[in-house]
Image 1: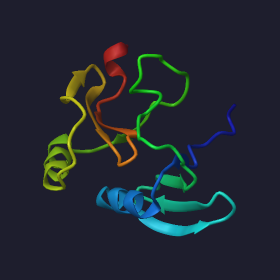
Image 2 (image 1 turned 180 degrees about the horizontal axis):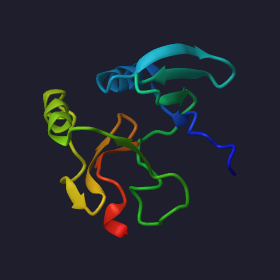
Image 3 (image 1 turned 90 degrees about the vertical axis):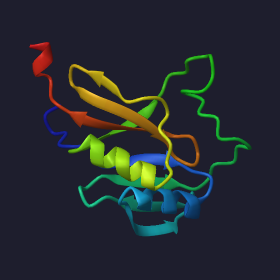
Length: 136
C-alpha cells in the first residue's frame, strides 16, 4: 500500500504514568499531552519524531512480558527498535543512567544491537544500523 508514509505512534500499556514518563524522559522523550480520555492516554515524543502513546490502564500484578518472558511464544509485537547514530555514546549514557542492558550487545550483518527494559518490562532495542548491503 503506497499511501503508508511512516509509523505514526507506538501504543504502550503502562502501569504508572509518572514512572514511565520519567524513564522515557531519560531517553529524550518529552510529554506532549495527557493523561486524558477514557483509557486514559498520555503522549510523549522524541525530538526525532518518534511518538509513544502511554495507555494507562494496565492492571496486572507483575511486569512479566508475556511475549518475551514466558516459555510459550505468543504472537504479537515483542519490541521496538530505535535506530541510533553512535552505539558507544548510547552505551555510556545508559550506564550513567543506571539502565542495565538485557544481555550483551550483538553484532550482525546489518549493525550492532543491544536491548534494555522499561519499568514495565517492555523491550527496547537500540540498533546502530548499517543497512541491508550485507544481504545483496
